Length: 428
Ligand SMILES: Nc1nc2c(ncn2[C@@H]2O[C@H](COP(=O)(O)OP(=O)(O)OP(=O)(O)O)[C@@H](O)[C@H]2O)c(=O)[nH]1
Ligand SMILES: [Mg+2]
Image (tube, rainbow, N blue to C red; front, side):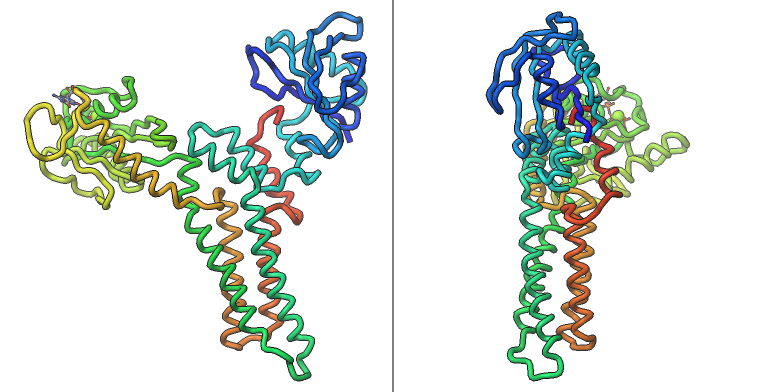
């Protein structure tokens, strides 16, 4: 096994940079550069010297014993001053040592997985945590990283193994009088697991939105102030505004943090009948994106636009509310009237939806759970109808267990590994 090293903190200038070394020769590297090896987990200030005895930096060193590090291997961390030159000098000195090589992207995490420090879902949680930009994303990633999905899967597995064992007994007694009817207990176990799977599957859409962002579309007729509103929300001139009707053609996206949720606001082309081909294409896009969005903010001067499907939580507001007093709720991108209310409404609606998020946060999780549920339903049918031999029900349950094992990486899953690790960058 090679000993690998890499910069674990971001590239560039910073107060401190951390270089991580992991593998059997990690402590040899510490010994060579520092002249000694500090006790495990005891932060120790040391002078780092290159092969010619030149001072590289004065650094804080941490060492970790086998089984007690992120990767599970013997490892060390060098906390040096975070300049490009210091990091380059340290990386160069490490490259000169025998048995050491630069880590590949994601290689530290891959070793953590191989050594059982993390399961596959925890690796995904870690990748999401590093990418997290909002509070909701951070919490969701941390939930997955902390192994919640692995624990849930373990409880499903436990129930399914018991169900299988009970059925195996029936099969063994096939020619004799079966002492007890196991069917009620088996059905109960299978029902419990399928119900729990269904609950997690139903939370997938919300979890996916927390990862990738909710979409809120601003729609309405031309010249009503959609782009002006978007710019006010964004706090910058993201979209061109003018008093010419039909100014916006493309969908303009602005990503924001609304109460910890990632939300992309979409400004769209004004909806109207038009002879202009390009404007017509813009309107088609506007309608399509608005209908796919999680929420719509409709600015109107009376009529609700055709083609856009309005749902319960959507807001219908009078545009340019500063121009004429009215009892109907309005909004003005120009004066900011109604903007705070708008944001609170968006936050409240989307938080309600986000709260349904469960443990299935990746499409991979959803697929595995859906597949497991399908085969368990088939097992339940076999038992309840009695139309197929018990052996087939056992096979179905075995398949569900294998699917859940693949979900957490308990069984060989080389193909998904490459996919998951492709998102990692150097030093993770
Ligand atoms: N008084 C007032 N004028 C506004 C308001 N919002 C926008 N305007 C003006 O109305 C004109 C149209 O604004 P836009 O934001 O470009 O309108 P739009 O809905 O994006 O128009 P299209 O892109 O053509 O669909 C501009 O001259 C704005 O300055 C508002 O709230 N109050
Ligand atoms: Mg516009």
